Amino acid sequence: MTWATRFRIREYLRESLWVVPSLGAVAGLLGALIVVLIDEHVKVPPEWAYSSSTASTVLSAIAGAGAALTGFVVTVTVLVVQMATGTFSARYMRLWYRDPVLKGVLALLIGTLAFAFSLMRRIETNFVPDLGVTVAEVLLLVGLVIFVLFLNRFIHRLRPVAVAALLAKGVQKSLDDDLARTRDIRDVFVGPLEGMDEEPSLTVRCERSGAIQAVNLSAIATWAHQHECLVLMRHSVGEFMEEGDPLFEVYGTPGQTDAADRDLRGLVALGLERTIEQDPAFALRVMVDMAGKALSPAINDPTTGVQALDYLGESLKRLGAVDRSSPRWHAGAAKQGVVVPVRRWEDYLALGITEIREFGATSIQVMRRLRAVLEDLMREVRPENRAAVAAEIARLDATVEAGFSGSIDLDRAGIADRQGLGGPERLGNVEPAPERALAPADRS
Image 1 (spheres, rainbow, N blue to C red):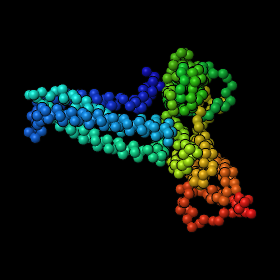
Image 2 (image 1 turned 120 degrees about the vertical axis):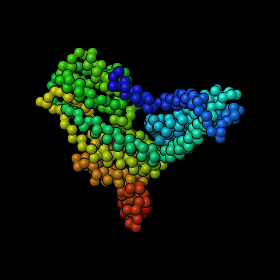
Image 3 (image 1 turned 180 degrees about the vertical axis):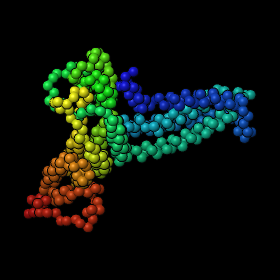
Image 4 (image 1 turned 60 degrees about the vertical axis):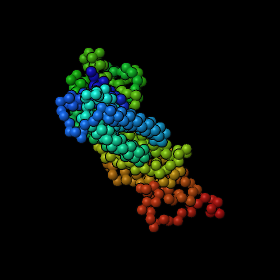
């Protein structure tokens, strides 16, 4: 089994909504068998004893309650799907159906249901699984508590700001994992090949279409050292590949072509959609989508756009603090190792800023908060990244000038405010609008 196949299996298990609940049902059935065996050999206290009719009634009520709660959880899930796709972004669903609390509450309720049904079959006139009935009651009470926690969790997660915070955590984890994964890899070069004067000895192509979800960079570098080759990755994580598109170009002698094809292809995982694990730009994409939808004329909610910018700015600050001065391969260097395309800081910054600046060009809240984000980045990111931030501030100036030309609020639109509008930096310091901001009709 290749690394890519194992990765896809892990992703399927993490995203599946039936695997964990099914395990809960199996655990309920096995638990009932164990409890019945214990009941046959252990005498419970009199206060725990039930008559056969009482035990049947209690277990029937527990099974009905478990089924009802399971149905309610499914209903809440469907409502969240509708709201998330309509209000946030369809890409947010990838985080929703991975949530362990959702799977845990379904597993517990379905397991309790299976446990109660299995015990009901063992009730006879001369035998009642008293311990099992008590355990079923405890499971139902625990299920009710977990259900309330589930409801509280996902009601709070329906807030756009909570979604943005969750995505920002995903960016941080992705960066931390990437640094830990690449720290000890030798001979990894970034960017294009500079000065390569020969044709590749092998081109590895995709056998099916899909987005690149993850790459085992360490294994690719190891393969290149074993075969004394230079491996060029043609596409980065997050890009969509069509069938037949080139994945790798190999310079050197890779050995048997069929084996090399199979080995290298098995180190790239393709899927229907991007993931955040090795692709922090995907989390930025979801936050920008949320802000863009909030700033659309149909919704017109600039405050949500400002809240998305809060966590988008935090994520950009983390990305801008990363040292991206990795070596590039050049003519004369040893033809051994792996060359990978990477996103530049300018790419992350343009992704996080451009569309929000365009969609919010006439919102004074968004313009002020966006300026505060860029000014924070100018202070916090690495020195080599500040030129790109300055260029974005110049674009913001031009956008404000065009969007508020002739408006009396032109002066206010050009001020940085971490709250968008009404932040404490401006208290007691509101200046009158300059004459250039007045419309011709006002001046006359």
